[in-house]
Amino acid sequence: CTRRHSTMASRTKTVAVVWAAYGGLSDVGKMAAMHGQLMTERGEPVVIKPVALYDGKKDSPTHGLEATDVVPSERVQKVVDALANTNVEIMDVNAKETEEKLAATFAGAHAVVATPGSRQPGNISRFLALGTNKIISAMHTAGVRRLVLGSSMGIGDDFLPTTPFGLFWAGFLRIFLRAAYADLKDMESLVFNTKPGEVDFLLVRAMGLAPEEPVMGAWRAITAPGQGVWDLAHKNVAKEDIGRFMFEEALRPTRHNVAVTLGHRDLAGPLKRLSTQQ
Image (cartoon, rainbow, N blue to C red; front, side):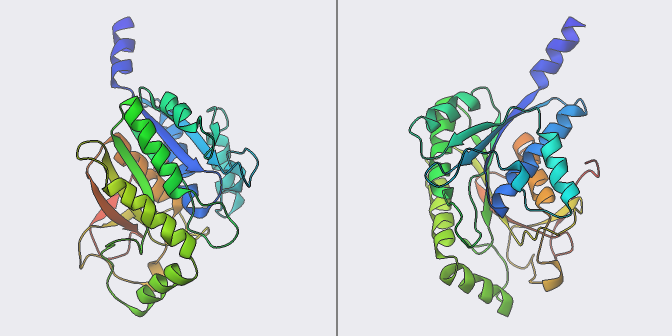
């Protein structure tokens, strides 16, 4: 029995999951943490270390789980229930000690999943670049290399074809979401400009994240020109599906130091089905 326990302990992988308290993109991190915790509850050798970041200059301390923007409400409750007893650490992204706290949390972790901000319009806190900078520095201190980081289509080369809707989204980002666009660009630059070998990263550029998009248990990975289409009927992907993809890439990496655009399973491109277990 002791030998079996020792073997299980040696096989166990620890993943730190960091999300911003508010924002649609940050919800993906909450979903990643949920999937990891459900794996733990099924007896799989997985441990999560959840962290919620908030802007102490504007917001009160919160993990933001109840603010998860999906419908119907049962989907929100599933996230809340799954993470209720996981001791989510809540940190002010602006505080000087946050980087040190993150490093302490990351100690012993195999990977970090992060969605530290939002691309939504409105008066919402934005700290994608600031949060990512602190996360990468803390990873370096803790000796963790694997980073799976949430980003957005429309940033860099997302391999989506030029279409009227694609041009609309690109213009919308640059004109109406200028702050979010600049923050996302700065965040990606931080990752791409890390020293060779310092971080083993995967940037996950999400397509639409409509709150009502149903969970499909599958996704499309767009990694080269010609794989993706602008299909208005399938422009969105469930936050749960992207969160699960990100957590799986943290546990069992298949892509290294690249960016991938992730969309609905019925987009043209390589299809990867996930387990139907929730």
